[in-house]
Amino acid sequence: MKNGKFCMDAHTGYWDASPENTKNKYGDAFIETFYAFHTGFNPTGQPQWTMDYDTQFRKVDPDWYLDTMFVQGDADMAILSTQVLMDFYKTGFVNPERNAELVKRAPNRLIALGGIDPRSPDALEQVDHQVTDLGMRGFKWYTAEWRGESRGWKANDPMVFPLYERCIELGITNMHFHKGPAVEPLALERFDVRDIDEPSTLYPELNFIVDHVGLPRLDDFCWLSARSPNVYASLAVALAFVHNRPRFFGNVMANLLFWLGPDRIIYGTDFPIWYPQWQLDDFMAFQIPADIEDEYGVSLTDEVKEKIIGGNIARLYGIDTEARLKELKGDEFDVRREERIARIPTETAGEAAETETGVAGTPR
Image 1 (cartoon, helix red, strand yellow):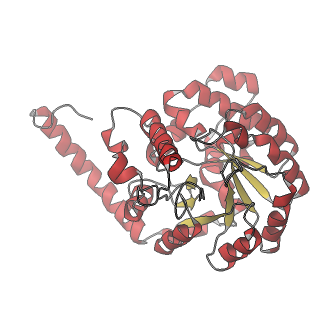
Image 2 (image 1 turned 60 degrees about the vertical axis):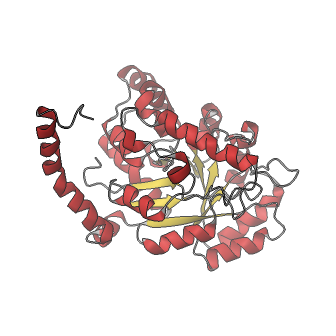
Image 3 (image 1 turned 90 degrees about the vertical axis):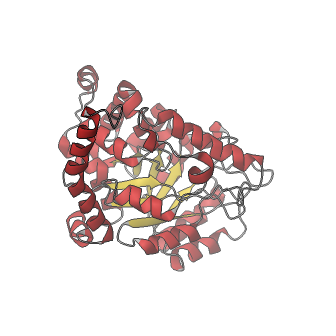
């Protein structure tokens, strides 16, 4: 539980990998890899955390997304990421237009990111359109994306610099980059985090939010982040290890706290690959093992956790967390969440009674 603290999930997806939207075998491979992550890292013994591949997972239902994030879960806000992938999907895997439509359902709770392939001849025009017409408040960049014969691009390629500069002109300062595990059929080397080094130095006005903290290149990420104060660590994917490999996760957190400090670490769950609530609950209960704390000289205190789960990303997007919590109080999702919480003691007592009489079978 977040204990009344502001929580903002900085990495979620509202995708469409339905058969109707999938172009080819590469689109199938991409979503199949997501599903392997989904079944492999969600904690076992909780069948409600595993979605059916064909009827639920391939295309995210908007009502289900909003209910799971803001009613069944404790998040107050979330960021909608993008992966364009037009070579794999007819309208893209996640596109800005769909993100903009979902934001209309919960404008005080959702922030949408735009997505652009810088190799596109109209890339600059797309920046203008997505910011001015669609209301995108940041951009997600996916450097391993295929485009024809090209198998990726680099964040420090001079062709991208005019796009950064246009973002600055439009007042868009948050650049989110996927720098982590590869998804089939994309190449891991195309997600190498080292190309963030140059643009983060050239454009101090921008914030470079590195999703997945560069894994498996955590050392490279930490070294470049130490010299670039505008580089931030987004925990999505790394956070999924908190349950099954807590010591590994402890090492990741110790490195981030040692190199970046508590003000540049950002919470994200990669929902719907993994369900958000168990990650939040496990993170709030997590403590770095004592020997690792001693080695790095760091501590994951309640104050630090409060910054990570919401305070840091809220600052980058200019959100007053106390004011926003007041705005959200009593909205549709808050009312439904409170109704759900009020039912929990009754439901728990009923399950216990059924179990004692042998009706319910093995408790979950």
